[in-house]
Structures are given as C-alpha cells and as structure tokens.
Image 1 (cartoon, rainbow, N blue to C red):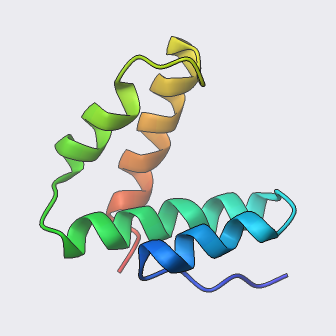
Image 2: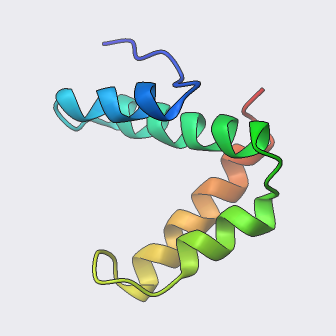
Length: 77
C-alpha cells in the first residue's frame, strides 16, 4: 500500500489508523523529517530526541533508529 509522506502532525496521527508495515514506518520517518525541517530543526536535534532515554525503546534500538534517521535525512526532499 502507498502511504503519502505526512506534512503535518494531524497527517502523522492519521497513520495510527493503519496496520504497522515497513512502508508505514518509512512514511512516518519521512514525515517526521519533513515536519522537523519545516519547523527549523536540524538533524542533530532530531537525533538527540531519538537518543533520549525512554521506556519505549532500549538503547541499542534508539541508536539504530538514530542511524536510520541520519541515512533518511539526506534522502527526504
């Protein structure tokens, strides 16, 4: 299924109505990058948020996600 890249927080929230898939996760990451850039945030800002300790992801997974965001940052227009 094709998921458009979300351009707003409302569009991001709407993704929660779909079953989780690789395409959905990719769209969410691209949307997060698009929204953060529009708000003037940098890659370093986003990576710092991803790496913040939380109860949702372990440290290894947070680092992996940070690496994914870094790789996607230059690919998302």
